[in-house]
Length: 85
Ligand code: FES
Image (cartoon, rainbow, N blue to C red; front, side):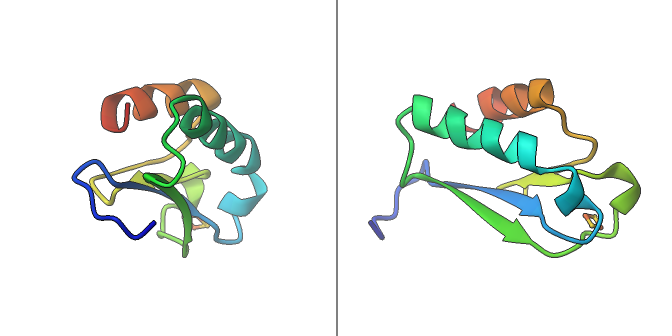
């Protein structure tokens, strides 16, 4: 805990009014992926405020590098492979 490591990453979920209605499935999917990869403690899943992209709910940002809208479970896997795994 608290150990800084180059691989430390943050997956940010928009938890604004619109996204919170759509993001639970994708959130679970990311949680499972993190667990399966044994990256609990290295990859953090956090909430963020409305990103002003509500039409694209659910919105997810990976490490503030890339914010994506309309994320499906399939997209979640792809994003995870691209940025985390
Ligand atoms: S509620 Fe998520 S972008 Fe506005």
